Every structure is written in C-alpha cells, then in structure tokens.
Length: 287
Picture 1 (cartoon, one colour):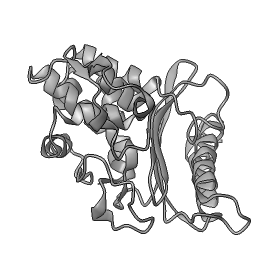
Picture 2 (spheres, helix red, strand yellow):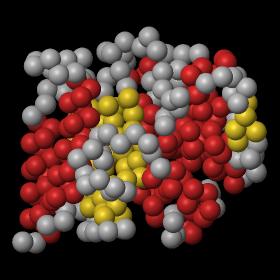
Picture 3 (cartoon, one colour):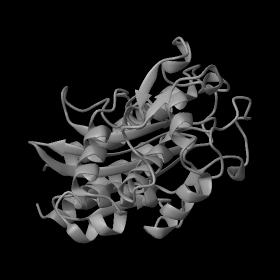
Picture 4 (cartoon, helix red, strand yellow):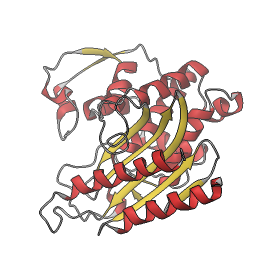
C-alpha cells in the first residue's frame, strides 16, 4: 500500500475521531518520515492556554543569546507570584526559595508552573514575546495576557486570552527540531545550538503525560507542551519512535462542555480525543 493511501486512511480516522465529539477539534499533524500533512481548522484562531509557553521560552532564550537576559541570574520566589495562579507546585511552597532564571523557564515548561511563568515574564514583556512570534512567522499567535484571570468565563471571547493556531504551534516545533542541525534555522530563531538543544530537551522533560502521550507505548519520547483552558484542552508536540522524530501533532479542542451527556467531564473527553488522534498517527504512519 502506498504512502498516499496510508495518509488518506489516517486522515479518515482522524476525521472520525473529531466528528464523534460535540466540541470543536482543530489540529495539524505532520508525518516526519514523508513530510505529509493532515489538518483540520489549522489556521483558525483558538485559545492557546499554556501551549503559548513554548514561544515564551524561545523568546527568553533569544534574549539570553542577545545578552539581555542572564539564565544564571538568581530569582527569588515571592508570595506575590502565587496570586491568581492555578498551576504548578511553587504556589504551595514557602516564599524565599531562590532558583536561576534557567530553572524558572524549566519549571514553566515541564510542570507548567505559573509562578515560574511570572518569574520569566518579570524579565520579558508581552510585546517582546508577541513581536518575537511575528518575527519568526507565527502570524496567528497573539500574546495578550501574562496570566489569564482565574475567574474567566468558560464562554470567554478569544481576545480575553492569548490565542494561537494549530499550524503556528506545529511550525514552531518544526523550527526547534530543524534548528538542531540547521544553522539557518538557528539564526531565524535567534539562539545558539546549545540553547536550542536545551529547548528541545526541556520539551522532552514534560512531566504532564496526558493527551498526546496517553495512548502511546510506555516510555515513548514526546517533546511537548500541554494546555488547560476554560474552553478546552490542547497539546502540541513531537513524537519520537526508535530514537528518531516520527510525527508532529498540534491539537486544540474548543467549546468543550463541562459535562458530556453521560456525565463524563468534558475535559476528560477533550484529552482523550487528543490521545486518540495521536494514537491514530502512531499506528497509521507506521504501516
């Protein structure tokens, strides 16, 4: 069976998975063995939730490369950083802990810790991060807020949060991956080979293993960043197989109900849907 036929079968399965749910699912997947791409609503604006942090990390690393930030700078955890924060573990710790800016970036990524996100954003501006995204071609990504308010309504407007597209996040992951071996891509991202290697390894170190990795064989390497939004769940990552990049998947659920008709929490099915999309790529792209 030829690759085109394989790709068509995968596309059919992905559509079935999305169509089975009452909420919106937008995605872009790329078979890294063939370069073939399958997408659904990939250019539609959608809440980014914490998937935005991959671009925050890269903007911070560029600032470090430019000499504006020092990744070894000590940062003190202050009680004010825990206000209006609903993710991570630092909010439960005793203020006064000192970590490096590098460790704050790591905490922002691997545990999606928003205390760490605030630490990083004390040294960046929204405009700086947003301008960086536009400069590398992420035209559909709009950084609007440091940390979304906890009281945000489940039916909030898009402009109430940072938004992105499935294509933008897949593109960013592809650039980080390509920059491991491409001097031209390193220059585009504005970072050194060492900083870009740190970025990819930090994505691989992600602690939260639901969504993309959830239905894959135990121990599968996935370089990814997840997101928890009021309107849905999202995840964007690079899946590895036999030690090599296998596929990129960027998936965003939206308009997810609080509960499904059978009482299952909506977020459970949102995460399960992304997990099923990922598994369909794992099985289909390998045939």
